[in-house]
Image (tube, rainbow over all chains, first blue to last red):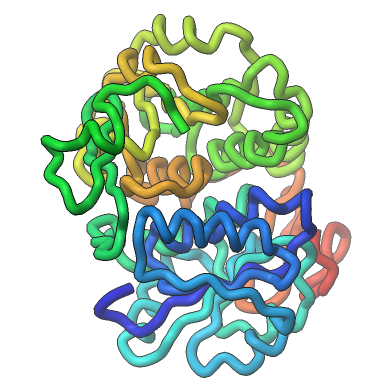
Length: 196
Length: 196
């Protein structure tokens, strides 16, 4: 996130078809909650395209990469490696320490998909559990990022967006970002019931 | 969560096959992050079974229900209705107010799957956005619950679990919950590289 060293999310493992939506959600969550970059497996092309499309429309800075050497990326990372796993140490204890590291070192966050080999546990500087209960890698990533950034990611700006949502108590408002909200109708209708 | 009024997560909409994993992750996230109950659509039987199975093994209290009248459940809810949507008001502004309500009223959290009709936006006391960016309903639910409970859900106890994970810096330890960690080998091996 702006103002810190780089935060990168690496999705470990992907089964095309079966994992498409989960991998897409990992990528979109990384972007929305303050990571600078996501590294997806080489075979996750459909997810990479979806995340790139959202980034084109809703803005960055955010980078999407694909990589066929994930073990090497983790092993050779020049900074802090965090592996999110239900077997790890509590997020509430580890996140503050990792936040301090982020002043001087980039952080790689490994999010498991299919089976994660033991060498990833060993390569990680921190194996972190968002609870020690089985739930969702997307949920774990979201809570971890929110705590890493202490909520500052919620105020992010998206300087190169084509469009932006204007928060509303009821209904929907989407504006083209070179317009004022009063001109919203050109992009989206206020209170439109048609969801996407 | 224990010590508050009931918190219930309602998954709105489900397409069997296509949405199975997302709906399962909504249910597991609700359980792991402090909700008391999840209401899944009538046609989400596979997801309901998975969440029930995890609850049997890793403990409750947590209730899984299926319901074919989701609109009526939302409309007739006797308490506060929260709808998570990227078009809503910021979580950082709304969660504290909803937390205060929870002292006296149960809270229903609606998590959209397929298209959410406009009447849900209207029926909600709070339309809440975890950022106004497109990402993941699972990520949104996770951050919302963590902020609603201010992290207290991370210390939850699971009194009727068969097994529990013991947090570790590296590797995995799972124990039968009527045993001490020293007896762990009967359930899971410490440092076992075999992930699930």
